[in-house]
Length: 249
Image (cartoon, rainbow, N blue to C red; front, side, top):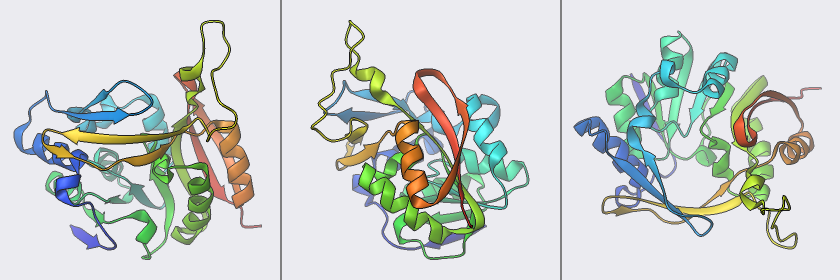
């Protein structure tokens, strides 16, 4: 079992997700939830046990993503490590990464063999064949400008022919009026750019930007960054799974 640390991690008093993951692992209290807030919608709850699910309990889109993983895999924003563990059980060479030291400690306790503690933007270690970013993990780029920057930076993480595998959603349905029109200010920022903050018990996190990107917009950004894009699956409410492969020609 190996652990690497690089760059910065979240302070534990600003890490509600990590606190929830650590608390559930120790207590096995099925009622634990991380509270999610935004200026955009009503508060929501993330049930922490959901982050500890086995592959048999994962939705189709996640299993399809695991099926597409190949070579040396980096699970970015791995959380409690369930996707990394599923890949590990399949015999895959997977490394789990998270910015939360509490999540990393929990993954190690759960039996994830290779774990990296730190921020993907600070990573400068060995390259990978697959970067896996599930549960809308690509959202960590925050904005469309952030997406453009990340797609370029991700090339330094990937071997020749490497790929990004991730899911996202087009959330335009949230702006639909009763008459079928969409209440979107075309002069404002892209509607998929949302600001969130989280709480777990007394632990309150800072606000952060998160991106939901529609497939047509992603297509444009992927092409501009030099990737071939493949749409693998489309589920309910425009929730989709893609593979972006480096165009080496």
